[in-house]
Each structure stands twice: as C-alpha cells, then as structure tokens.
Image (cartoon, rainbow, N blue to C red; front, side, top):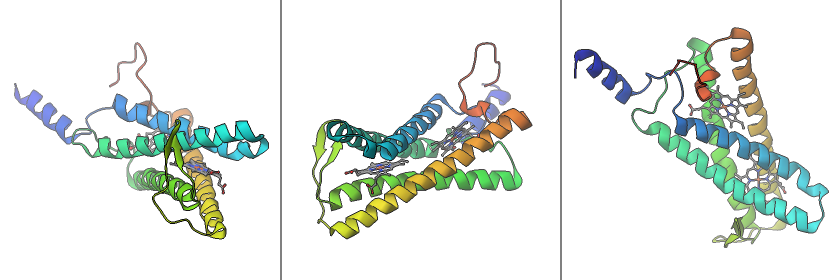
Length: 196
Ligand code: HEM
Ligand code: HEM
C-alpha cells in the first residue's frame, strides 16, 4: 500500500471522506421520513373512521411506531461506528443549527416511541406489533393521567412534524436556491453522476 492509499484508508476509518451518506444511513433516513408521515397521517385521521377501520389504523400506527423507534436507534448506533461519519456540509452557524436540529429530531423521535409505549401500557392495554400483542408490564394510571400522556404524545408528534418540515425546507433551499451538494448527500447516485 503506498502512502496515498494509507492516508485515504486512515481518512476512511476516521470517517468523513465521502460526498454522500452511505446506503444504510440513506435507507434509514428515508424509512424514518415515510414512517413519520404515515404515523402522523394515521393519527390525525383515524377519528373520522368507524370501528373496524379505526382499529386497524391504530394497530398500524403502533406497528409503524415500533419500526420507527427501531430505525432511529439503528441510525444512531450506525453513525457511532468508526468510518460512518460524514464531514459537515456547511460551517459556522449553519453547521451548529443543522447539528442541533438533527439531534433534536433524534431526541424527540426516541421520546415519542417511549411515550407511545407508556400511553398504551399505562392505560392497561397491550402494545401491538403486526398482530403480536405485547402486554403491559406497568401499573395502570388514572384515566386523567393517561389522557395527559396522550396529549404530550400528540404535542411531541406535532413538534417532530414542524421541525422536520423546517429541516426539509432548509434542504430544498440548499438544492434549489444555493444549488450546492447538501441535498445530493442524502440521495442515491444517479447513472452518469460521478460524485461519491
Ligand atoms: C411522529 C410520529 C408520531 C405521531 C405524529 C403520533 C401521533 C399520535 C397521536 C396524535 C395519537 C393520539 C393521542 C391521543 O389519543 O391522545 C397517538 C396515539 C398513539 N401513538 Fe403515536 N404518534 C407518533 C409516533 C408513535 C410511536 C413512535 C409510537 C410507538 C412506538 C406510537 C404509539 C402510539 C400509541 C400506542 C397510541 C395510542 C393508540 C390508542 O390506543 O388509541 N406513536 N399518536
Ligand atoms: C420526518 C421527516 C424527516 C426527519 C425526521 C429527518 C431527519 C433527519 C436527520 C436526523 C438527519 C441527520 C442525519 C444524520 O447525520 O444522522 C437528516 C439529514 C438530512 N435530511 Fe432529513 N429528515 C426528514 C425529512 C427530510 C426531507 C423531506 C428531506 C428533503 C427534502 C430531508 C433531507 C435531508 C438531507 C439532505 C440531510 C443531510 C444533511 C447533511 O448533509 O448534513 N430530510 N434528516
């Protein structure tokens, strides 16, 4: 191995020598987006449906919620492994702001999954994962407290959606106005596109 290769390998192990997120990070990002949108749409519309359909929508929300929690944990573990880090796309205040938004999104998504379990279990009901019933291991709380947990879960859901919309707007601004590579970092390579 010549000196240049050694330096390149060292850079790869340290991380941050790519111009794109790796396929695992990208897949987890876009799976997270789909699951958040699906869960938001389900939760905001299930009231309008009658029982068998509404029941199916709530059960789907729970299953997707567990998948969402797992995708977020997998992403955090993946990015901690040496060689999986990306160099920041921007510097100064923009770097600080984007880091803060990304970590706040991760924090809110984890909190939302925990609240989802607590909401269901503290009401004395089983959590459901594609037909598998996960019974409550905790004490049941009063109806009023359970209702409050539901309110917190709903507000955190709105916070995630609003923050993610601002984050998506920032990505689109980079792509359409600044015309830099920020958006491409999270998109698969197209044929004929030589970069990373
Ligand atoms: C960003 C994503 C999410 C949004 C926007 C969202 C939104 C909501 C809303 C608005 C409700 C109704 C709350 C109420 O009745 O007071 C709800 C209920 C619920 N959510 Fe979520 N949620 C999300 C993610 C999750 C996750 C990750 C989980 C679990 C891991 C989860 C589990 C539940 C459960 C168990 C219920 C109660 C269903 C019932 O028994 O009626 N949610 N969600
Ligand atoms: C629910 C919706 C979304 C959530 C929760 C979310 C969350 C995140 C998080 C946590 C990161 C940081 C990745 C990491 O380094 O670990 C990220 C990066 C990114 N997201 Fe999203 N995202 C959402 C929607 C979108 C949408 C709709 C777009 C595009 C329009 C987008 C474009 C990007 C881009 C371009 C990056 C990479 C930024 C960089 O290179 O620093 N995201 N997203």
